[in-house]
Amino acid sequence: MRILVTGGAGYVGSVTVERLLAAGHAVWVLDDVSTGHAAAVPREATLTVASYTDEDRVTRLLVDNSIEAILHCAARSLVGESIREPSIYYRANVVGGVALLEAARRAGVGRIVFSSTAAVYGIPATTPITEAAPLDPINPYGETKRTFEVAMRWYGAAYGLRSISLRYFNVAGASERNGEDHDPETHLIPTILGAAASGQPMALFGDDYPTPDGTPIRDYIHVEDLANAHELALAATGVPLEPGTPPAVSLNLGTGTGFSVRDVIGAAEAAVGRPIPYSTGPRRAGDPPILVASAERARELLGWTPRRGSLAEMIGSAWRWRQAHPGGYGETR
Ligand code: UFG
Image: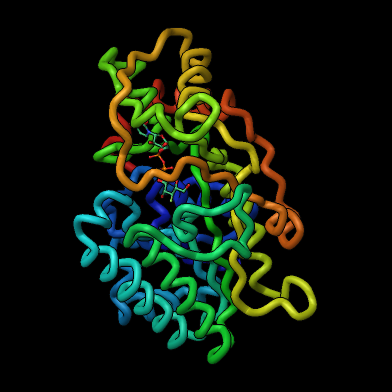
């Protein structure tokens, strides 16, 4: 298949590009490298440094390269930033996203897979979370992702767009080639590994949650398992998933197993072979106590199974990548 990946220079996007290339697809990457890295894009993919929000340019890119399906990973994705600057999130994730949908419509591209998030659920009443749980995001990040999912549903009903929204839980780990290099870094595992490397204590955000050890529980999923799910989802946009399936489908991607922040710190200590320096501070605003996926629907509809669900594998691969790239990505590709 001929696939355009927006955000293909980012963390999830670049590992997915690797997977798509390995499966024999032809891949074009569209990324403005504002948060991604050109060096993360394998040479076998064609990189265009531009924004997916530029409708005319994207239309030309789609037409000129006879693109058959879009994987839309590009977005603004920091919860805290979204609360401070909702304008950035609505412009990029909603207005920009609709420009991409319009480009697809003009170019006659009718298949799209979208990077959505568990943040669409807000603070869920029950766990594990199924796709039937109410959508009640508690920040503009989750709200804008939900809005775009709904836009794709209406485009499906009216224009025949076939879309699959993949609601990621907590993505972790690295491939051999690509890993996590954010500035600023806010995610737990790279922050822990940063503390291990520097010896500077990290902050544990609250130990008074209603969980067995008092720290929040999350469902961590290996980025390579996530990449496989994208490949399956792209294939699945070609045909109805099962009789009567609507053109727009949303699927949770997690392993169904929850680990606390203390579990993750313990696993990281085992992986790096030394204690992680940390201090316990107050809660971070907007952190739900428990987010664990039911990923049954993705298993049923895509035939997807996460294979690298242990913390040891996720943290071990992230640590190996970090040691191989102590300064993150360089400037060269
Ligand atoms: N945490 C710390 N210290 C840190 C960083 C994180 O204690 O320095 C804790 C957080 O309080 C949270 C847990 O580690 O309890 C995980 O935090 P992350 O920032 O790694 O991830 P989040 O669960 O906040 O968010 C991630 C994605 C979101 C997505 C969400 C859905 O970043 O985009 O998972 O599960 F919506």
